[in-house]
Structure formats: C-alpha cells, structure tokens
Image 1 (cartoon, helix red, strand yellow):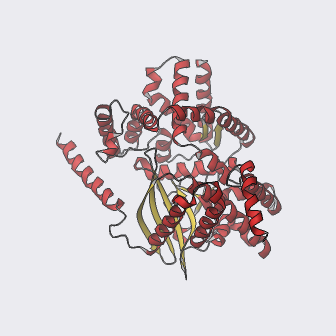
Image 2 (spheres, helix red, strand yellow):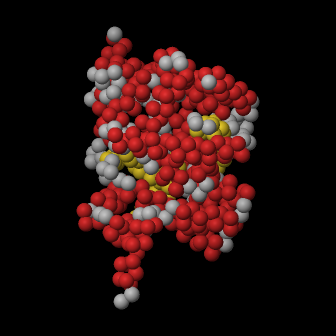
Length: 261
Length: 226
C-alpha cells in the first residue's frame, strides 16, 4: 500500500518534470475582447493545456462520486456530533502543524517577513493557542497566516503551470503544482510523525472531512453555478493559482491585471 | 534580537495600516463602494427579515432579492464579456436569448448563496475608479475563520454603478464562464451551448425540493385564479 502511494507520487513527479519541457508555450496569457474597458483593465484569460482531458474527466467523475457518496455524508454526520468550535480547532491544529511547509516556501521565495510571521505564529499558536487549536496569533496579535506552498514557489521562480491533471482523491493540480505537492509532502511534519500508511491515510482523511464540514455546500454551489463543472473547476484552479503566484506568500491578489502567470 | 525588534516595529506598523485600511467607515466615501454596500445590505435585510422566513415566503423573498440584484448588475455587459470574441458572431436575438439564460444561471446561484447567509461579516475595504470603470474590494470574514477577498468590477451608467464581474480569491467569475463557453463552443455550437445552459438552469432550480415546491405552488395557483 505504501509503495502504491510512493509510486503515485513518483509518477506525478515524472509527469511534472516531463511537462516542464513544454511549460510556457502552452500557457500564454491572451487578451480577449472584454467589454471595451480601457486597455489596462482588460481581463487576461488563461488558456489551459489539457491533453489528458479524457482521463482527467474520468477522475473528475470519480472524485465527484467520492464526494457525494462518501465525503459529504461522513462530514455531515461528523458536523452533527462535533461542535463547530471544535472543528475549527482541529483545522487550526493541522494548519499549525503544517507550518514548515509555509516557512520553507517563504524562505525559498525570499520572503523574510513571511518567514518571520510564520515563526511568530507558530510560537504563539503552539503556546498561547494550546498546541495550535486556537489561532491566537490572528485573533489577539493581528498576525494572519500566509499561504505558501512549493508549487507557488516554483511559479515565482518563473515556471509556468503546464498541463492540467485532475488527480483521483487529490483533485485539480497543474503539472507544476503536482511537483509542488510532492515537495510539500516532504516538508510536512506529519510525513515523519506518522510513518505507517494506514494511520497516515486515516489522518489525511480526517483532516479532509473536518475541513469539508466547515464549508458545507461549497462544492455543490460551485457545481450549480457552472455550465460545465469540469471546465469551471479547471479554469478556477488556474486562475486561483495564478493569483497566488502573483501575490506571493502575502496572499492572493484579486487583480487579474497584475497576475500574469 | 535587535533585528527582531525592528521587524516587530515594522510589522506593527504594517498591521496597524492594515487595520486602518480595513475599517469601512474611515474615509470611505466612494460612490461605487457605497452603492454596492447599500445593495448588499438591502439584500441581506430581505434574507434576514423575520417576516420573510419559511418556505411559505420563499416565492416573495426570491422575487425581492432578484429585483434587488437586477438593480445592481449589468447583465448585458456580463453576458457580452463572458461570450468574449464569440459575441460578434451572434445575431441580436441570439444575444438576447443568451443574456437572459446567462443572467438566470447567475441569479439562481447568487440567490442560493445569499439564502445560505449565516451572519458572515463583510468588510468594505477600498474602491479604485478609472473613468467609467471601477473596482470595489471587500473581504468576507467566514464563520470558519478565514478571510475571503472579493472584488466587484463595476461600470458607471446614468443611474449608478453596475457590477459586471465578481472576483473571489483571484478567480474572476466572468473569465471562468468565458473559458467554459469558449471550450464548449469549440466542440459544439451556439445551439449546443444554449441547450447546455437550459439544462443546467432546469437542473438547479433554487428553492425547496420538488415535493415541497408542489404543495407550495398550489396556494399561489389559486391566488392567481380570481
């Protein structure tokens, strides 16, 4: 079982590396005629390269069924028995534990301020926040967290997202961010704290269910608003990642003009 | 140690500037921002109105929210922008048909969104205006403790500022639709797109489940008869 995970990750790495070769040329930002806005305010649309679409769509449907048949009922039942304050605490705990991912990537991005904020947050939340269950750093110290991951770091280094991959269980990732996903796996303390596969998968699943319970209906609403949910998710993913890369660890920027990747 | 102290000073300044920028009532007199805020407040007031609760009031509530959304959204501009380059190829009747369906899809979704409103705070942050166009930035403080940045792209007309795009966490709604529509038109044609839109709208009609809706429609039907 453990080997299966490893192999999947390695396969992801291989695909990612292969896709790097074609990065950049397939992801040009093209200007589409908007509604006659001034040139500077024109929306930049993203052209996503998706040669794996048939496979991706199959995995999308798999994940969709997984959500409606398993994750949604489980998270609803969980939300029913677990008060929301406790669920927020669990989310904060996992977030705090994953600090090395953000710290490492802030450093890799040359974001000293971000790295310092992450250190402060970890110190505060681990002590005052009772091993991370309370985000005291944000609540009492006005220190909101950063969003930094390895895919974003690679993006800031100038690497384009490349082809789209809708992974089973994991969900949407670009080839670049799939490599980032593997990188973050090795920066995550959970990888070393829990080395046996069954408990490790269990913890991952619990984290997912807990997180879903805090944003019920989000996926349903997203699906409802879409004309073609697969295409909608693919584009939303690329837009979101583009703004995260443009904004750096400071957070997403909402300005499509400054987002070029 | 010294460096840490300096950083902290810098950090405090940064934080306090953030806090000041975050206060909606400090120097925020922008017209576009004001109008967005007023419309949002009105919509949330309807949704939260104790007299408007329950499935019996759903039809009236929906109608009110819809008309409030209509007052602030420019569906034509939104549809045109979502169609992108294909807009030129459409006939006048096709444009109207598409705009109608497209706005219906968005309205239904917006309605579902505000119906699910459970007291999230909205922080009105800033507006930037360049000629007829502007951007209004707000942050939604969700109940799970995360801050979601939302930008309204607005366009000035005689009767005020109208929304033609909403960007959430860097994801532009209109761009998202444009890329879907582009991909669908590449494989299919305008009729295929319209059929798909109709299907989606029918599938996701907002409101109570069919069984409830049926009983609810009855009194409405009798109301209309006399």
